[in-house]
Amino acid sequence: MKRTFLMMAAMVCGMMAWADTIVPQEMGIRYYMPRTVVKLVVEYTETQYVPGKYAPWAEKLLGIAQAIQEDTTAYEMDDVRLAVGAVPDTSRVYYVYPQAGMQTQWLSLTKDGILYGYNESYQAPASRKRRSVKDTTTVTVQLPASTLEETVKSDSLALQAKSVAKQIYQLRDNRIYLLSGDAENTPADGFSMKAILEEIDRQERALVALFTGKQVMRKVHREFRIDPTIAMDSVVVLTLGEDSIRLRLVPEQMTEAQPVVDPKAKKQKTAPVASQLYYNIPGMAHITVTSDQLGELLEEYLPVAQLGVSVPLSQDLFSNAGERVKIRFDVNTGNIQSIRRQL
Image 1: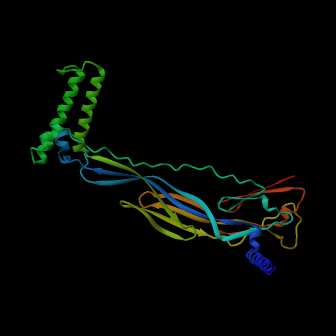
Image 2 (image 1 turned 180 degrees about the horizontal axis):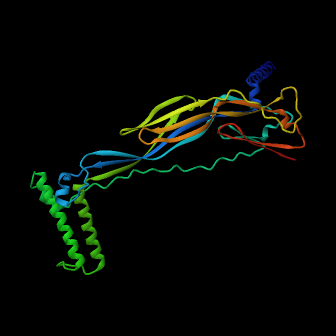
Image 3 (image 1 turned 90 degrees about the vertical axis):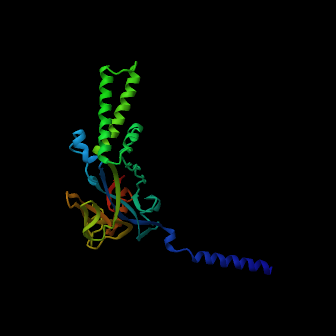
């Protein structure tokens, strides 16, 4: 009997301890205001110009006046844009408790807990595939074996250049003989003829590149995280050769807002009674991206959730028992997208 009493006392104490851990918030539904995150996306093409080994003799031996003579790098801007998203703002958390006129099961949240709608089913946005940016480079030049044997015999670059130029002219003569039918061993079928001509073209391009040089092109994708609440003035985010990409950001914080009330409600002398649903009126960020050489690349006025103020919806929106109110919120800013009524 004594043992039974002790067991029952322990169970009661345990239940009391469990009950003490229940806080009022756990009986409601928790939701967050969104926090705007911003990334500056810059895409450009980097082209490296590499001179050929025999560039100084390109015009004299081959008549090529536009051969690359020194290592240089050029940049071409392809795209500049802002990528905007939202995450839960843990500094602004709210709760909704069951009460007359508002049912918590009518609320819908995103998977991160941001308020999506009242009497509106959550629909996740369609996923977008990120554009793939691949590097593109020219093929490394390779000399035919016969030319290598001929050029290594001389340490003089001028003599090597002359020998390679001679090989180029010989390849061109061979092409003319084949196409005119004057070659001693003309291929009997078109397939063989095509294969031989393609090999002649490949060898000629490789040898000519030793005079003209080559271009190495690379597509580059860069992302920079931006805090839209911090003012910036002509901050250099990227340097491309002699050019600088600069960012200017001016945050404009919202300081006050009026609650949304039912337009059908009669004018009241007293302030409307606040409900448990809060919406957010975002502030703005004026973002400008410029290039020292190209001028303005981008200018946008961007709504920023954390620069705004949270305002409760009026309780009179939910007081009409004969109508069903449907509210949709912008999950990126917290603002109201639409309010509709159904009988």
